[in-house]
Image 1 (tube, rainbow, N blue to C red):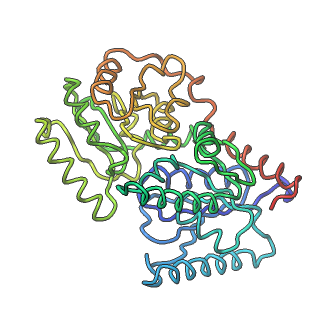
Image 2: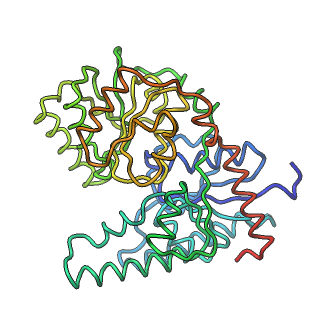
Length: 385
């Protein structure tokens, strides 16, 4: 690759705690580097739980908070981001573009004045908006809804890249965003690396099992999966592979263990916690079952298919219906419908169609990276701002 074609790219994440979104940011950097570009990951604050390999990591702050007053805390973070970028660019090579991969990063890269930033929008903004409005009713609800909606419209008025077409449609048609540019580009998946990591030695259960690799959080709806698993009559054990985040996550884990006991399945459910390398678990599973209320483009479904593992999923906004297509579409079930998910678990364990390259080819990392660069160059030709 000539020096003219080599890009310098900065990828921002809030942290590198165990999770699919954080793993995707590292996947981006690894593939940019493999294709001859200079890619760096900026991490706002600890923890760093993922294996980062040869990817350059720039930690913005060792502390979660730089000041107790929220506006000052944001300003200090933005200043540190600017300083880090200037230090790297002191070699005379400016960054071509940045990719923001998390909500705090979306705001702080804007405050830091970085240009251009592609905000990789990852989850349903309608669900996020509902969460911000909360339980307010009547006039108060309308006021709060409008306030948050206007805030989102200002924040996401730049360059957006959505991880699914359904998400792009939601942002433009349902939320009414009017960004400078918007394009759908799927997340990058390195098939060879995934399959190599899946072959690394791990001590797995000695029997077949059903798996859900996801952080323990209400949005992932482990409660729904526990109910569906109990109703399915499946005799295979269920493994919940994922850590918790903060006090809310710890409370949720306690609630899920209590629910498993209440449903009479505690002896068949294993709370495995976070694994730096979940791929041997995914490859070794008889079935991966996803029960989320909302996603962007659920990494776990694509990784499972790449590794040849059958999957069932809620047909949540957004992404699952763009992944489970053709003869796999029948393994989608409505959101918050435990009996339907239970029926799909039974059906998938009994018989599942062969997983072919046709199901997964569009998710290859090389296609994603080239799409980002082509998008950047096309916008540059039009006077990128």
